[in-house]
Length: 385
Image (cartoon, rainbow, N blue to C red):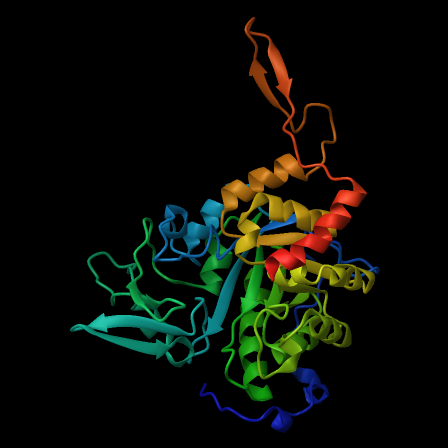
């Protein structure tokens, strides 16, 4: 479906969405890891979410962890499932022949005869999209896959464990069913979309979710404000979160430019929560209580979420979950520092002393007095700046 850029003022009011646009996925299939009772959506415990599965790829990084598994792949999702994660987060776009696929970047790159060519993912058919990278068929060679880094460099998409790209349907069928899906509805930051296009894309994604989610927990999230409002209108089964940079970057659409705007949009649209860049939270810690008092859930993403101490600070502040790249390290840290022990010895390690007797070793966690915590919450915004 072709894109057409229009001015925001030309987009019809969201209340004009036809009643028949809703997809019939209303049921009792509420996410198992969350409470969807009369009091609204609530996350019952501090939640760890794997970013694009086992972690995103930074191909020019010296850290092997950033190039271990192909991001947004079945193997990345299932590897993440081996750890005590609640969800994996991934990006979904819809091809021109209406197939939801899992891919982060707006453009997909290849090299032919020394020249780099790029195509917009949403302008490819499913077959064209799957032609890039490793192939399912034995003996078939796909197009080489490249990626543009934030500083504009073009690098080969080389990882230790590579795999063909996948569709949303394949993820539902092949990923460990205990793992929840945080589906980011991916749109280009610099395109203003017509409402009809957004409705069509979201209906296409919702149909796959309706057909294949079964009892799997699902959360929708998106940076696109209108998409967040529309997907909330199209279904009532799964919670919808608004993604925001928390003011760390500025956009033409003012609804994206602060946590206060995110809070306003979420309340007006009846959304269940906000996912903020972690720096936005640390720069403006007082907004956490405003979000919580409004009855919304709050998650975060960003590089600082790969630092255990930063994760623990957010837990103390009232953040309910984090999206992380270092899945193994952060899930271990959360288990050690945050998750409560319900029975003596349940979260403790057993070692042998010199006489070969088992001895409990209680792992320490940071402890702050209220005065120290207050000081840290005042200091952190200055450090982030």
